[in-house]
Image 1 (cartoon, rainbow, N blue to C red):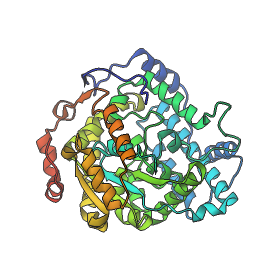
Image 2 (image 1 turned 30 degrees about the horizontal axis):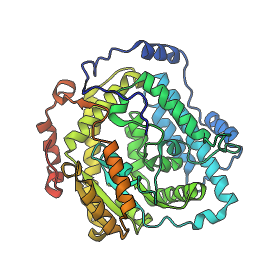
Image 3 (image 1 turned 180 degrees about the vertical axis):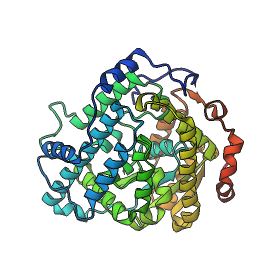
Image 4 (image 1 turned 60 degrees about the vertical axis):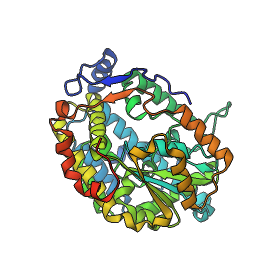
Length: 423
């Protein structure tokens, strides 16, 4: 799989993380975009989405417009965003609305979609940077599995008249590729942290956002109000909506068994298991310090283009609290998933030990691990050694003013519950 623009450095060392030196391209992008104020009027965004979708039924049976208003108010209330980010978040809302409109229309036209079974999925549940991406891409190498590639996560439902072009390329894929190429030009280090090339397997929580009910917005903007609003929602309704989107995708692009993953599931295990009662779940566990330092370093780096200023203290406080909440919920609810249908994978056991873990997972799921699939797994592992884009040097103390040990003391409850090793 080609990862265009990969960085072949051994170490990526941020000496300008908190006071960035922008490249000429980055400066030009910001100068150009800052001149134009981006407006978040809901009516304007909805009109655009309706025009793109060619239909106007939003399926507002369960307060969708209220969630839309809260979502937009949260973005508009973050006064530190650059117009560049406001513009991309506005496009994101329009895109979500357009996909929701197209989905509503598709379900009306093909009511049989509602009876498609989403049976026996594998679901990977764990923090970002805890091996979830590695594991889900690996399991997706099983040709019997249906996964969600990034290009499809962004535009799950084709707009009317948007079939593949003459060479069979889906225009949704072409757009994702063009976007990725542009990102590589403006912020290449992103690849080493989380390379969202079009074929990379993405999180279905992106699909949940067609219902504007997920935690995704927290990764794009500073929206504590949205976090509190999201945490107050009855997620059983929204996970049921997620299942509808999965049914539609199965209908559109092939009936196979799903492999799913998202960190959000850590704090939504009840709704997750209620929605997918016959799922087999792989929980991944890693030192929370490694997770937090990776997340906030990535955020701080992205913020040179996303925000008017970088606030390392805010990032540390918000994300250590956020990870604390996710892991507390995971510890509290872990036993909602039965031992017969789940495994726990410690990060320090993952690297180089994937095959036995996959055997265990497949055994719990009652799925045969054939010789062909084993070969596919081995090929994937050979092609994707850890850190192939270069390793990132983290420096919590220098950038965020806290030591790893100090941060780790907040997570004793997690080390007590799972086999996690301090890194």
